[in-house]
Length: 521
Ligand SMILES: Nc1ncnc2c1ncn2[C@@H]1O[C@H](COP(=O)(O)OP(=O)(O)OP(=O)(O)O)[C@@H](O)[C@H]1O
Ligand SMILES: CCCCCCCCCCCCC/C=C/[C@@H](O)[C@H](CO)NC(=O)CCCCC
Ligand SMILES: [Ca+2]
Image (cartoon, rainbow, N blue to C red):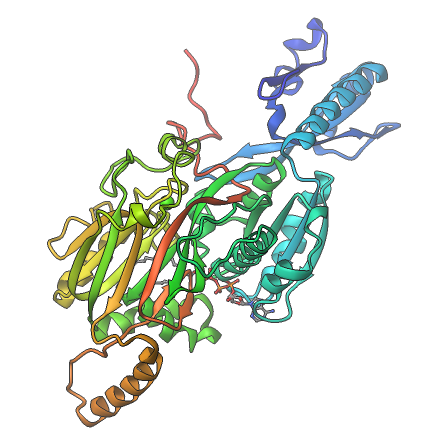
């Protein structure tokens, strides 16, 4: 029995084969086995439905049984845990099988499966179901796979981030799991990345500094409102699927952007950095958290109607030495060739390199978006930048210039259809390693004061002139669902800075209907 080779168990002798064809054999890849356990058959009393379906004669002839729990693939990237029970005539043979499988599982644990995890649960994310989701759907699977956990239910925002940054005894763990949404994931990233830099003497405030990658993998159990990181790395927002990817020890590297203002570190971003439309949606939706996930629909519609544009200059360093482009038809999938090819060879550009070859675009924008990954989510299953890569060291900079409401609506609606949202005259997209944004009228340190005064002044004017259709001078940046306090920012992509307990989105089999596979001819 080898890892990745099918474990084919056929424990009955020939005379029973034709009789019990459907019951006697099953094929499971060892790398997708969660656990194996002996099944007690006590004087004919059975604790497994399948056993009871066995004809009496067979149970007598094959009284020794064991159950293998394994990953089964269902529709649309969903994984579930299934059990299969094998029966044999001799106790010694059963012990041999159980021992062999356990040895294989131990070898996998030594290699890449986690044994001890630190779990943070946000009880207030999404529909506030985090604790319940973990207790009912995830904890039993971890227990079945003999993974031990230390669980912390957060008591306030940034609890997980600060605990990871300073207190957590990280040496004890093989990974960190968060139960929540993109905001909770962002807390984990900030905690782990900051801790890693501090321990390695790296100054986060310097935009040119090359950051040290984090060694612990992160698992995401989706329990938020958008859950875009989970959706874009697994293909579905399903707690059981995510838990199973953690258990089998998957690993997917991921890029992280650092965001600076005036040589001061602001935040990290791993999905969307959005100014204009997505910044305004977020700013409005934060005041409506009580609405839960529906707040984004409400604020999205309201922001669409206000139709504000913002003036400024975007300068960027295009990624020239790479294979992919943002207009590719191919997608970043499990084992992505481009991420393997481009990723590990990339370095974080130092000053001499990045002062050359910059492009500049000036104008009035409805939205400036940087997508380090596709940002696919249930609202937009192909995402903001469908061809973006998880781990290629680049971000897709999408510039949506001022246009009519009708055209902007066409652009937005294309995020939900097969049509290309970039194929519009007012949209341009660049794959970049770094970029800067400078709003018009920006004045260095006094920016914040100016923004506050500007906002007050603007709202005063608009109250006095309700028909006014002019736009405020500044929007906010939406940084993975958090509002940034500065409009002028500098962003750099750090290739494969973190690793997740996923494998990227698996290619769908040609025949999706796994329950009724086509007959072999
Ligand atoms: N115990 C807590 N009380 C209040 N806020 C918390 C707590 N724990 C974490 N948070 C904060 O809650 C915010 C939202 O959490 P989360 O991302 O889990 O859900 P969401 O915003 O509904 O989902 P999404 O980010 O996917 O849209 C995060 O910014 C996080 O810092
Ligand atoms: C009028 C028709 C509108 C149709 C629009 C469809 C376009 C949807 C694209 C959604 C892209 C989400 C990108 C992910 C951002 C997350 O980091 C962030 C935190 O979870 N979520 C939002 O900001 C929430 C953003 C919600 C935006 C609506
Ligand atoms: Ca990327």
